[in-house]
Each structure stands twice: as structure tokens, then as C-alpha cells.
Image 1 (cartoon, rainbow, N blue to C red):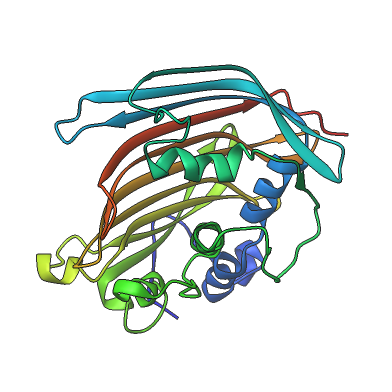
Image 2 (cartoon, rainbow, N blue to C red):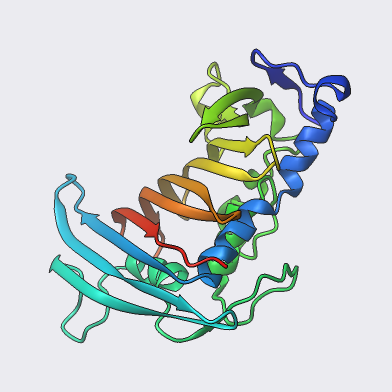
Length: 283
């Protein structure tokens, strides 16, 4: 277990019903964040998104806006776009995307075909998902794991932020906060402030912040900061996910991404993406 810093909070069996080690165990084994995204696909809702693509000087060279409805009957789900507006360099002449980033977000949030949906938690891999999708799920929903399929560039071992070899780079902090009027525990993993530049390169994950609802330990807010550079991969990404409840169901309401990535054999891409989900139909 890593050394945990307590920021104006006391964690004990007497006060909270669990120990600090228990708390870290909850973080590592959490499935509520994953279930929230299963709810995203399982329940009908409206969506509105905006994607901006930038050149290397930071100028917007392409914009894609989508507005529509994600439908679900509890077994299958599909989307219907009410409006799709694009400007600049988004599509090729043949109608395909010029960039990988919008393809990735389509796979996650705007599937072209009808997809299966279920609230069943499964450890098995979805054969319909691409390798990139499976790795994104692993990184996004399982904090501290190195269980990604793509091992290129030495990335996987740097995701295991709780491992003994990685603990030298991070501070682990438990505190308290209020989010959307709810009392929460805040758990932060961030790179040590006095870390030397050469050592920072070993910390792909620069920061993760999670807010846990004290009533049920659901993750209702999370932010990620990834920075990494080597011969194979160069990236700098920020991701924020805001969660809420609809009729007691835990759902993502706002998702934000801003990032740069450059993978060998691909053109570099700089993009910003926002997604707002509203009007969930939850029984």
C-alpha cells in the first residue's frame, strides 16, 4: 500500500467504518464509474456534442457538432442524429473522417449500428469492441491497472500507479469536498511537486482526482491528466467527467476532453470535445 496523506480528514473504523487501506482498496476495485457508463448506453437520453480540431498553432481547422437522441429498449441501443453540422477539415471527399479522434468518439458515444446493451457486469472482453476501445475502458475504469493489451512503448507498466515501483513518483491524498450539494471523499493521485524532470517522464498519469459520494461510495466526478513522450508515443490529455443521479441511477452528464497525441505512423492530432447528456428516461 502507498503512503496516504490525509488532508484535514480523519479516516478510521470508529469515524468512517473503514480504514485508510480499506479506502484505497475501494478505489482500486471501484465499479460504480463503469456502471455509470453502462447506464449511459442503457437508458434513452438526449445528447449534444462539439468537437474542434486544431492545427499546431492552436487555430481551429475543423468543427463537428452533433445533436440527437440515444435510444434504448433495454436490449438494443441506437442513435438518431437530429442535426450534424461540420465546418472546415473534418471529412474527406469520400465522407470518411480525416482524423482518428472523431472516429474514436463515434465508437464510444455515437455507434453507427445498433448495439447490445446490458447492466450485467462482466469481466469478459466484448468481441465487438476494437483493441483501442478495450484499452480505453481498462485505463478509464480501472485505476492503477496495467492490464492493457497494447504494450508498445513501455506504456502499460506506467499505468500501475499503486505499484511499489511507481509510488516514488506520486502523492496519494484523501480529503473531503462538496460536489453538487453532496458530501464527498476526494481521492487524488498526483505527481510529486519536487519530482525532477527526468523522473516525471516515468509518470504517464500526472493526476487523477475522484470524488466519492459518502452515502454510497459512487464516483460522481473524475478528472485525468496524462502526459507522456517517447520514441513511439507523444501525448498530453485532459479528461473530466461529471456524474449525477436520475431517479437514483448514476449517470454521466458532462464529459470533456482536450488532448494532443502523436503516434508513430500517424499524423499528430489536437482536439477538444464536449458532450452533454440530458433528459434521461430512467424507470
